[in-house]
Length: 139
Ligand code: ATP
Ligand code: MG
Image (cartoon, rainbow, N blue to C red; front, side, top):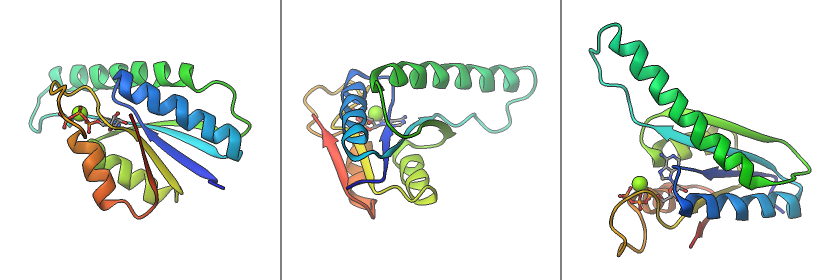
């Protein structure tokens, strides 16, 4: 049914739950899977050597989050790719979804945010509002 599935990860348990479900769906549908992580923009005007340090810190952290997510996917019949991009989570997820023409976006209902009472995080809410393909919110 779905041919290309995108799942967003932020390093939270909620997102890992979304990854496990996305992996299961990818197996069931024989779909390609792309795991996306958005990292915080690097402040403008940062001089050397702080700029290089900020870049490698961001990329190391992003790699750790994506590696952890990859471990949760398990076997998939098709491809699994990862992508780390600078920017707001919803913006990045929606951009990748459009460029790669995915037909399903999977996100956790919540993420790393501190408000445990929140039903839906701001990023998943934003994705639901602006996506042009189906969105699966995992809770
Ligand atoms: P808030 O960020 O509004 O304080 P929250 O952190 O609890 O609340 P969201 O950030 O909306 O909730 O996270 C919901 C889901 O969105 C996550 O489970 C994940 O799937 C996706 N997501 C959140 N942040 C990122 C990110 N930086 N990169 C990729 N996906 C993300
Ligand atoms: Mg968040």
